[in-house]
Length: 276
Image (cartoon, rainbow, N blue to C red):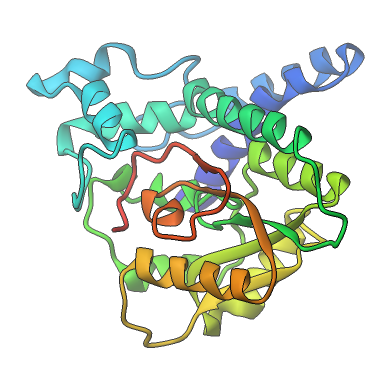
């Protein structure tokens, strides 16, 4: 029941913010439907999607949550395990409100502007690397019922969520994905998910409207290495095979650090967890 209500609220938030990307003739109807659904939605952790971000919640309990989030996104705060307990409400409202979508939109707008200015070699070897979790697919339905990152990571419960194959697409990333295909740049998914999750990951991606990617690279089961070592190693294999990595996007710094990073990297916001 809680998970169903969570998904409803998240979908309403996505529809409401996506409405303004539609033609004017459709905006009012779509927005009205979203408002009607939101009015009936059950609160998540006593939170409801708000317009904007967290406001005064950023100063609760003497913790400057907005400054903490800035330190996380700037990679000044590292190796942290959980979101500060006093920042659960702040992070929840940031993720469910319009702020997260606006921040993501700025990143993707810059990525698209960069991609449109590229001069391709014509050999069909240009690729763009995409992370999956919190980049291409959103795990907000899971984290909204697990404290928005304030609770320690539980691999068992998270993997149970993954095998449901129900993670929604992140609209901004999907917009970039489709633009790259139109430009002739091949998307490559590079994820920390393991090889035994390939079938459900493919099904989830396709169910959410992703198609036409060139490769889906997953981590071997039991593979032991840092995320940076694993992902940079996979990018090196791509480069050695003759591919040109023109872009790389992810929500974690470990998605975009480690040579070869790609000609240009883009970092999406994620204040819910850290992978080093």
